[in-house]
Length: 316
Ligand SMILES: NC(=O)c1ccc[n+]([C@@H]2O[C@H](COP(=O)([O-])OP(=O)(O)OC[C@H]3O[C@@H](n4cnc5c(N)ncnc54)[C@H](O)[C@@H]3O)[C@@H](O)[C@H]2O)c1
Image (tube, rainbow, N blue to C red; front, side):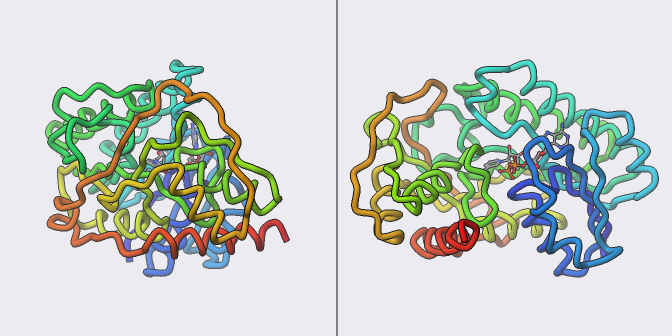
């Protein structure tokens, strides 16, 4: 049994990850300021009794060090973040405050209290900028130009992680995760398009497609993403690793698939393409396969069907 501190533990990925770690027999200390996360996301984790504790804390606060001193985690999963591209364009100062200063506060607290390893939630969809070759490999990070402040803060995080590994003895793995989707997804996050489209279609309304709809993304099912974090607790030392399927799916394709699953027969609305968005993206996961023994497992159609079933249940 390992003691694992999960920041962003009330969020979409963090809460699913906490459930998974608890099921594996670990003790989980979750930290979240509930700015985006929800108490309801932790319902399953709470059923584990004293193996799960939750602290309503800002990752930038001084109280973090005290929490580290008291709970003495062996591993930290750092997922707390300002998680959106568009909010980072509207307020880059806030984005950097949470995503850079929050990360530094976590790394400093971890290094001072003898944490073995930090697993970081990076963003495969933004750190590489517009990729020259697809599927994009981790080596493309050298000289990449992220298109948004969010992509910049997620990219610079890797340099800080390397610094702390080299000079402070704190091991790390940075997971450059694709667009994660599945139950508990917040419609406003990076891969919110699936939750938004499905939600609208279930309500009988037409979702809006931005631009021509030919832009592509690499969609990863939540269970697969969470599996990568769990594996990285003990593997992938000092690495940036892509967590994606290697497959491109266009927004138009996603619309058609979801319409088929939901039974929606309308046409999409059209809206202009917002700034900061990539044209095409998919991630090469060969290195993650070698280092973590991770491979994508869930087919998009199956993951979408499960997500729609969850949303149907939520809408009651
Ligand atoms: N969802 C995706 O497709 C995706 C893709 C790549 C990377 N990521 C990264 O994975 C992580 C989790 O993303 P998510 O989709 O679960 O988003 P989320 O918004 O559901 O989770 C982020 C959590 O961080 C919390 N938080 C925000 N600011 C905080 C602060 N100052 N102190 C403490 N807690 C704070 C929020 O309340 C929220 O619960 C983020 O770092 C995100 O950038 C997500």
